[in-house]
Length: 423
Image (cartoon, rainbow, N blue to C red; front, side, top):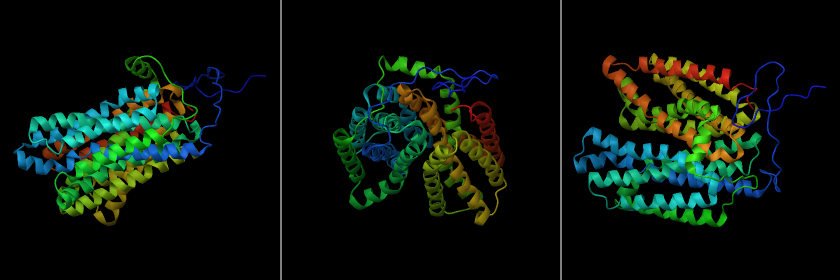
């Protein structure tokens, strides 16, 4: 009697030839404590999400202060843009080695180390008074953005693959730390003194580092890696699934980042909204995307990540076409923008549900680092394209239609390469 096909090996793709079941290695011995069945899993999820959020709060401190810094130091628009982009770039690329280091040393060590390392440039912002010095501080501040790659390998040790989508999605709420920075930095500075935001965030980072060291534990299913970070990164880059998920995350999360950055200018130019009104609507866009991320992860566990991704990208493609025609803001435009936020946030949750299913057990951090870096970098190009198109055509339609094409291509790619037979 022919045995039934087995699931594909982690990180690989199924053999789709007829009658050729995928071959997997023998499963590892089960851990002494079943992952996801103890109170330790919930505690790890809460602590990891808190650490992610606090580090992202620190990571995003420069952007709200950029207009004032430009005025105080006489910076050009280009110099201001570089200052804001530098922490984002370092934080995105730095996720690759930090994810590999987490696979090797565990989150209990890496979360405190990264949090304390981030507290140093946060404090330095209080006395940095020149552009060159701010560039150095901003570069080091990028360390805070690497915290994203720590939590998922921690949670992978506590939750089985079938439940990681929801856990990873809830963990993704930590990206709301950037919104906290946006809406609290200037008010805290005005109310308590210009150094107050830096002192408060540095204290939060130090307090979290102590709490994580005392309470956070790596899961019973964790498998520590050996060897160098370079070798670990090289190994995950050989996995096709790493590239596939990086591409999809660049579209999903990169699209969210691009919209959250560029939406205020878009609403101001296309709909003549005041800055405060445009900012409030952008905050709603960000909030919907943050809420949709855990929902996308939960749906991926309930059904399948490919179903979530195909649906999210396909609907996003339709909504992008709607926005390209600049519909009336109430109600159609608002529905379209909030729908885009939900689709992009849900897609981000679906991508990491796939990471939880397909990444090798001892390489979750390394894969997360590469995929996370792709998402961060994916947010750089769209605002430049949108700005260039608007400058040439005095219209955003071409840029939004391009977004629609890319989202549709992502849906087709997911269906063909990562269908239901892939995990």
